Length: 196
Image (tube, rainbow, N blue to C red; front, side, top):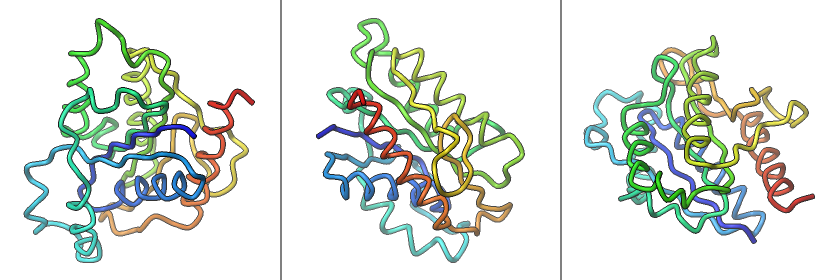
């Protein structure tokens, strides 16, 4: 059994839905998984969210906020998820990644496996850039990114991680095809970390 830590930031609920897909897939496969969200002082109001996703607010708020980067230590795999903002991660995810500077010199995350996911308004390059930002962070921390193979079933995915296109109004829920891609990516990660 491997130990996974999933950390996400979500505004409209899309990135949370992907994180939850990872969490459920790992549980179904008998893996140890911890689910956290980044701190977000603006999340509590929820007034500007799409009505369909306000129902997810309680579920998101029930997920504990990760307090410090050191909480991921001891994990075999770190999975990060962020909405795509202009081809980059959100401010809240960037702040979490930057908090690893306290760990960088001693490199306790070296050798940890890494994967990532994002949601974006459109699929015109921004999601891939966002995923690359998270992969670059992982490499600086000595982690080992696990790419998404081109032959996984479900929605077509870039090599850098899992993406979901939510539409310009963020009102397209995560599809069954994307959920299938997440499940197949989890199976691939488990195969990689088992050395098969």
